[in-house]
Length: 412
Image (cartoon, rainbow, N blue to C red):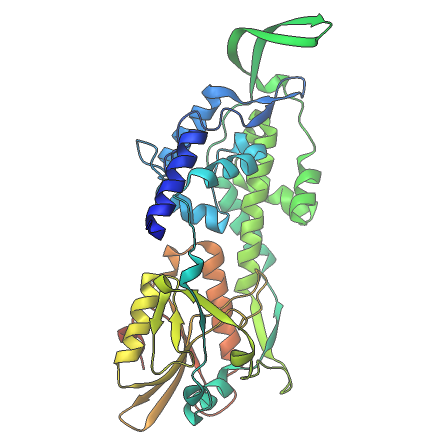
């Protein structure tokens, strides 16, 4: 009988043979059919030469290695929608991303036979210890934002100033013979693609202030200060569209972070909270490959998403100081300006048989926030402010980021 693994490998091989796509390998020609525009605004494929430009960029950024093999950095960028591409390909970003998603890895085929429903452990869920922990973290909050406009402008200036270099505007043209007959119109290319660099004086400049105002919702005066202070206006003359795309992305990124820097959370009334009954009412499922059996958790198994989470759950089980815990399910979220944030763990630790610590823990492989992407950093900051707003009772829950249980127990 063919095993599940053998079936998945055979199916992947058949797809590779039928489509010519090698899973996990990006070829220099993969983007040749991506649609661009010629000098007359007509849609056409960007061709092999520009496809190679994209491939070289992916290699330089570390998304692929010298043989085109996909790296984890590319998989994370595709998952998090943070793929960085040359500014000249901004309009084709969605198409390029679609191509990369097809080749970024082998088929992820989940075996339905390995799917399991995870049940609650009522003895833990209804225990006095877990009820005390839940009472400290269950309440909902609302937030308001305040930010320093001068700091935002300064940050935007710096972001635009240090953004990647923008190439000159280029035109690509091709020669073709056109034949019109009873069968219709046929075109046959007679000359290879040729690329021409446009001089700055030949480019009609758009209204950059209006365009960026529409994209960022900042005032024209603020945008003018940002652009003037960035020292990058020559790039605007060289390649207006690419510069506008780059500046808008840099400014909007700074806006998101500025909002989080000035965020303040406030606990809502006593009637606004996550009911403990939701653990039993909401179905939780996992697959055998990411399930870990438990004895102290509110669930009979932990559904983990990474090796860091699996290791942390194992440490919670084996350490006698940990009394009860929960891997917080997806419905438990903290509101943030960047979308809902779902913390990892709620933990009750008892020290020396007396002192109780109520904790909410975010597990990361790196304790330095600089090592995390900007949105992830921002949501962690929001999580810290949310749980700080809930610290209104004796022995409130503390929020922290940790790599291991030792990081948690070592803090006072």
